[in-house]
Length: 94
Image (cartoon, rainbow, N blue to C red; front, side, top):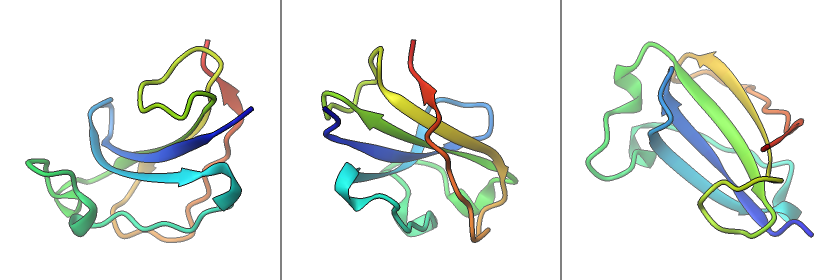
């Protein structure tokens, strides 16, 4: 049973999130936007970066920490302000 997940925006090559959007599986497909207003407190401005990675993760537990069996997908090299990005959730966390 899948509970929910999150979209994570990170600096290219980093696992530290810059912004997070939480959603329920029932909300998929989900339209989203990452901009400077979405940045986590104390984080870097998304608009200051040349490229970001967007990861979508669906968690069996619904918890923020990724665990074995979670489903995910990612898109790298996204320029801030880009539109029409589709993240395909097609991998399983080992």
